[in-house]
Length: 93
Image (cartoon, rainbow, N blue to C red; front, side, top):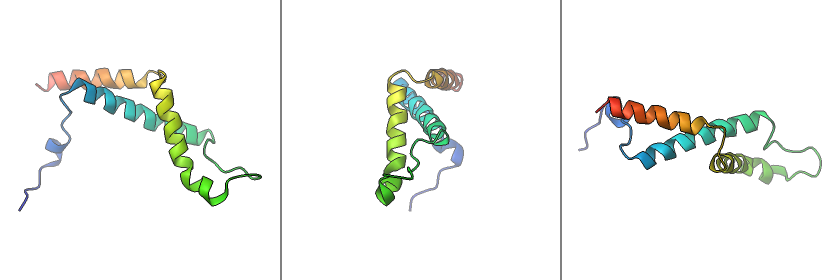
């Protein structure tokens, strides 16, 4: 039988800097995806739209746009998050 770990131990930060950077970039991409959705990207057009198929896959398109923005430099949020995670990781040691 496997033992259930406490929540605190499963939320420990990764020790690898590349994993920290990846996590920070994913968080920035999620933030940007929500901002893009709020701006109307991914909503169906009234005329000449893609119908139900477009509606179902619009979230993937928004997510990829957000990831592309992060890879192109983003808004600097991932770097701030990365530095904060790295600092917290160093304090915890």
